[in-house]
Image 1 (cartoon, rainbow, N blue to C red):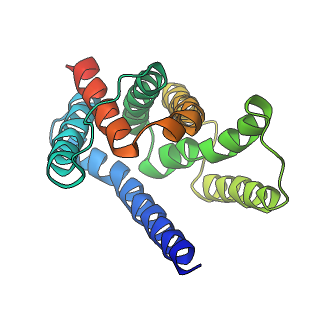
Image 2 (cartoon, rainbow, N blue to C red):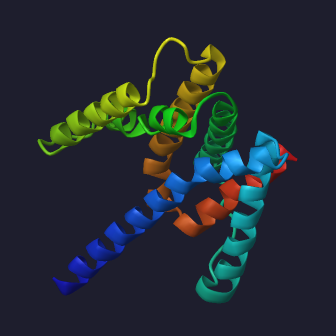
Length: 197
């Protein structure tokens, strides 16, 4: 019983830390752009640092397999790399807030497509979460001035990045059942480095 609560707490803390890191990403990317980096350069550096840190951690701590070259993991890598690049391009055209709101609408699509594609059971607790997510997107978009005056290309980039991340998440639901998450992340980082080089 205590192990489950400990795992739930660790999982919740990991989610909060991940959300914090993702929240700072658009700000850091905008700063990188201001200092002359391109979307491709910024994303390449992001994945390079990720891969190096993961390689050291896996090699010294977990001693597990560094890479996992299964087709679902490679598909995840492609979706995440393309989605990340499109998101970084969106940040060239849109404010960090607008691009992020559009990108982070992906949980709504993941939830709905998981029901349609994987035939997941519809649970009652899903609906309040979906309603709150959609309301949050609408409120922040409205307050942030999301209107027809936004650059169309920026909106296309942001929506496309959302779609790629949705597909990445859907593929990952099955890939993570069979593969070590650290190896998957290292593989995705390596694929991104190769694609963006």
